[in-house]
Length: 244
Image 1 (cartoon, rainbow, N blue to C red):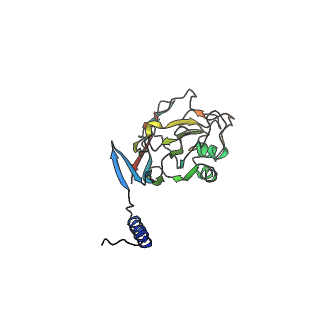
Image 2: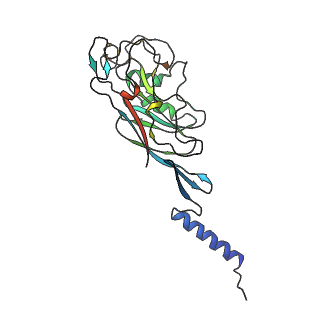
Image 3: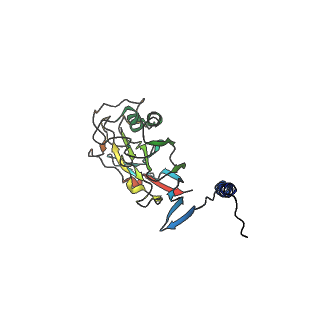
């Protein structure tokens, strides 16, 4: 005679097996796929969160910035803000005046107020500060994008950042995107202070007596186009992401 396990016991055994597998970090149908340099971690048909190490570093040489007086100096970047955003969230609007917190990042290299402002914004999942050359780690999920801001120090109010929508971190098949993303970085003009020749202006952060000293511009955020010459972004900054 075939023995039939009572229904209650069968359910208990099944649940116990599932819980044990999940506790061991396995899950019942979890698997890692690897395709063309992209990692896709799936559990129960859904792509799970992944951890990524990001590095934003200054790569300027001692003569990267060519001055109008014929001399050359290095082109540093400042401490900055980074955030992981989703949905239709952006951290600034092109063609509109910069918020006061973004102004302080762009003019003085101070990201603190911008971080505090973004902590309360809908669609900002993670926000913090970074020091150039020091990696930071974030946990990502499909649909997330990376944004950051850092001042071009030898300027009045210029900053590096991706386009407002940020850098996509997953492709259309929810595969994690890693590697060098420097090509997506733009030099922006905050439009808050009149631009002087880069590297020699008396109202620029390295030479001004105290913050917020230059003539107010009352302009809008835009890609820099002021008639002065600037090095390519890749000569000043490098941004890379690595799966942890």
